[in-house]
Image 1 (spheres, rainbow, N blue to C red):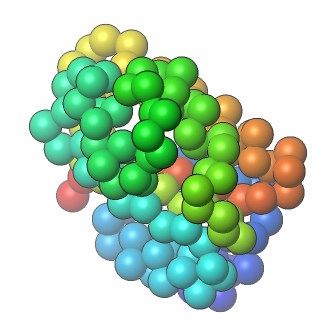
Image 2: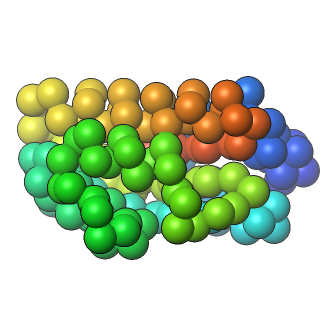
Length: 137
């Protein structure tokens, strides 16, 4: 997808979801989302092998409200709310997810499920919510 196609696709909430993307394509993606007035968040999961580490990274990078409970349900609540950060759309770039996936428990699948559910929830409101997992080089 070229830059124009990318910029044209990002606002389409019904096409949003969870995808993987090579690292080389991230700068163009971030530029396109920024130009569309999206809230853009980059979360590195390097070294994360369990839920508590993942949740702490999300809390740090997305600057969740004080009521964030530090568990999967709270992550879902925050990703489907964003009342503290209104935007035309949302883009999450999840970098280095390999350690979490390699840990072999359900945490990686739980994260993907929460991201997918958040995207579907926002899509129902006509707001695009994209999550891209960066493929490690």
